[in-house]
Length: 340
Image 1 (tube, rainbow, N blue to C red):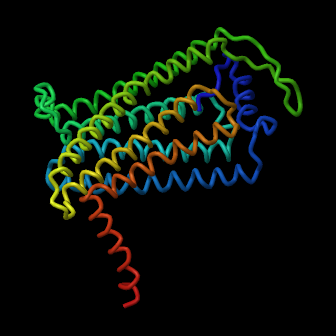
Image 2 (cartoon, rainbow, N blue to C red; image 1 turned 135 degrees about the horizontal axis):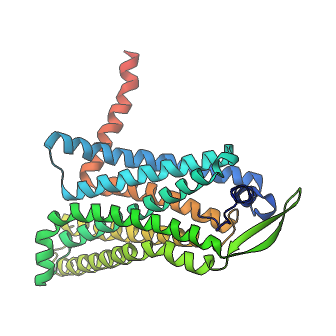
Image 3 (cartoon, helix red, strand yellow; image 1 turned 90 degrees about the vertical axis):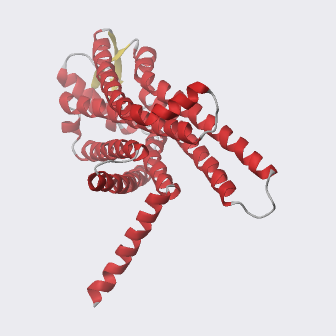
């Protein structure tokens, strides 16, 4: 996504960027696989936009109707809006880069996409981490005084933490781009053979290590927070489930089934979050060529995460699940109304 650093010459930068984006010699994918990948990505983008749009609409309607919204609903609104914006941006970018490469390669357009991509990704990671942290504080059963005090104050802290995450994500995305353009002065030439002539390309000597560190610094903190909150919540639920199992009378306990379902859901969320963070880490680190198979796989994972996580949120949230069933019922009844 971030590509490489380039020298100040705008024409050389655009030419090199276009070659790096579309040079068939570097592509490990056949035309069929490229078409299939684009179709899969677009399907994931549309699924994510629909699922997150549904979550946003439900909680926004509650917000407007009741003049307030629950803390978890507020987090879900922030998370869903960031994901809608992110997947819309990625869909727009892949469309423009496929249909108008010369326009996409212009500096203003190229860096605008990169800054926005980093910002929205970091926002999404932070909001998902706060959602996991909020569920941990509200559901986990610990008797430590600090934990109990945090549980009492968490609802008032969340709005400030969400806006702080937006500020941190924006600051870090701007810092990353400034670092990237700043390193362009320390470059050395390499020969790149195109179909018509030999183009001079420039790569920053420090881009592979230093830029990877700065780009991925914004991933580490929310990743650690999400993992710790999810693991502690799973351990707390597991301990409580074992305690309930030892006191069970033999019949199925709805409360125990709910705890087991919460453990499974949290485990799925944790796995999805880690896969997405690793894919984003690899993608921003430029470990592979732009058109390589591994780079494409990272794109598919990053597009699948917002869609699959949002679908699981709808499935595991009773209010959202009921609203989705009502929507399906209405959509099912509309054709019958038209035939009457």
